[in-house]
Length: 570
Image (tube, rainbow, N blue to C red):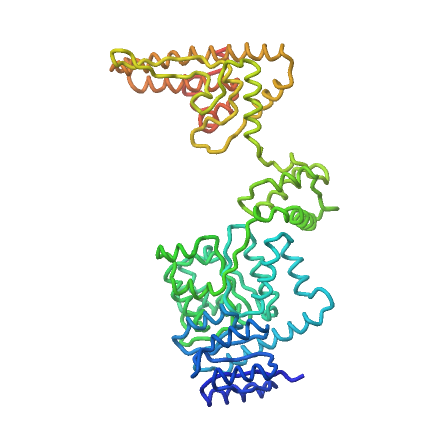
């Protein structure tokens, strides 16, 4: 069956040139010189694709693009003059297949027609498929998930694969932007060409022009041979610009011209070389905000962001986590040459679905690799995942209920100040002086379950304290009484140590300086704080370091410097 095309342009010579070119390629064509004539041809005949100018005597080619895109799936390309790039971008957004610039170059026209023929052939294969097309099978096998947000995403990817318009992939880190970009390439008519991914943030600014456009031998020091740039390597295929927001402004200008004119000039060369590429770009940053801040060129932004595809986070598609986990476990088993892929227990699968994935799919893959490494059998349990507790409120409630069972008169801990063993309050006297009083909070030791480090925002439970609290909840009343006596003794000791600190602070409030100097006074205060933390944690240096907000090595150095040892306090 002969392929037919509709050519719409008001220039008679250009229409004849395009008609002759199409005839040599075995394509029959009809020519329309006005918008109304093109509409008549379109209604009376069936065409495989269409070429139209944007500026017509009786209207705009955008109207024809919109009408054809809404009524059929045939590829439609637009012809635009220099200075009409905004109209070309608008046409691509309305559903145009591709565009070609005036003055018309025959090699570029042939490339456009060949790509259109590939789309036609691909559509015919899809219609001939009995049930599921090969493209749909590829999409389902490589883009895992059947949640509600994935169905429209897959349909959009299939539509974008037919087009030649630049696509901008936005989404958080780890959502699979490169996976989607490679899918768009493999599903497109350019599948036989190269897919060239490049991380724009990983190339030094001094080498960026050479990497993108190439260079000639002897063009600069160290250029010992000709080198093809990324644009030349991607000729006939797709160039994926990952982290495009990291491009320096100087490079953005050169990239804009290469994308718009589809020609590049290597460093040291005297002529521009045409390239046939499709641009896909991605970043996890807010590119529109960078444009407002002046960190990214507005003209380049509108040139690469013709069609934006936003990828969902893993937290919005939790129903896909079990399927993704099985897929990654099979991949890990294949990569690591395991006898059989590991499997998740029901508890582990439920725990993954309740986890907050800040790193999205990439975090899930890394988490499963760690779990496979730690698991002793082919079953992965919750303990192998190494995830933190997701219900800290429940733990706090249990601790507070246990504390109330010991002494119902003591109020529960509400903040960091009343979670420590010694509570200091300031009261005003009649003559206006401030007096610091110390009150013993004996049962607060049993209630303390949060990290006292002031710079930590998450709640960290020390294993020894959590286990002690859990054991206390299940113990008899005799064990509870013994625990209470032990903690009361510990709090009493801490109160005695703190009384020395209070007396020193009262000297400062009375306007008296420490008699032995500032350095000795600060060392004594530091020593008392370290001793108090060590006693509260049972001389566990790791927990004491966490309590003081320092490292284990730093604490050990300070103990040696201040001559603090456990034997001296036994």
